[in-house]
Image (cartoon, rainbow, N blue to C red; front, side):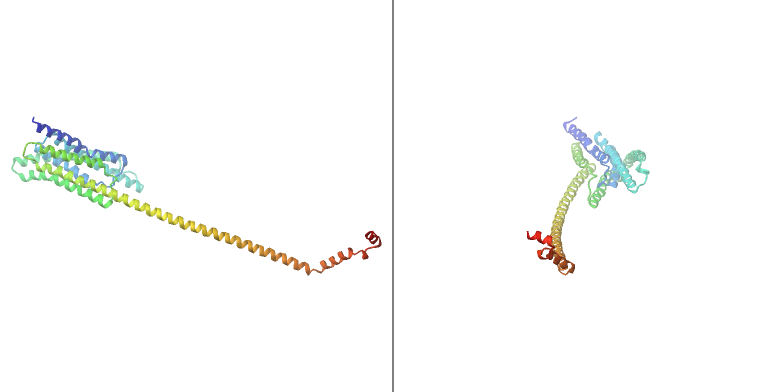
Length: 321
């Protein structure tokens, strides 16, 4: 084995680890967060269907063993993520509507669906491989070419629902960034592994890897932009809210000051009114006492009692002494 072939195998195994398991972080994030925002079900379905098409053509093309295992692992995790997405979406809807868990919302049904889908995809891969071999032996090159192009088309079409979901919802909380980064790196190493193989260069297989890497880069840029935009709007909203709170506080403080001033004025006014009322009562009492005849008679009697000339003899003698 030449150094070129060894290097091709090394790159192929690195691509196997990266490009095949890149959906594992996504599956783990689904399980931990139960969040599916931003990720597209049709994309995962198309990626799962991509696996038997690419695997069948890879077996027919006699690619390196890592590149044969790679699409099957990718298809497995794509199917797992597809079932997870439908399970959590159905469960969230049933909980929101207060309904009991039924259908895919039940774990047992979800697992059964996963098994059925994997068996169906495995059968499709075997059927496509034998169909490609037969078409090659019978000289039907059109079908063989279609099998080489179909995986690239499925990958390309699969990204459109993802981009549409991200743009329309403006939410990327459910997307795993490590998954996207691993997908890009796996595509790059897969292309390097193909380039180091003896000529001719397999452009059809390389097309799938290049398409994945390029579109994943676009996803990363869109994720960054949506998060940056959400953060910017969040800062503006926070500033506006702070301004509204400050204005409300100033207004409330002004109202409090005005209320306190009015209260003090009312208290002073009440005190003046009370003082005037008391003064009027006092004047009324004095006027009443001046007009009372009995009181004047009493005062006259008191004056006579104080006059010694009018006292009885004994009392007058005592007074004279």
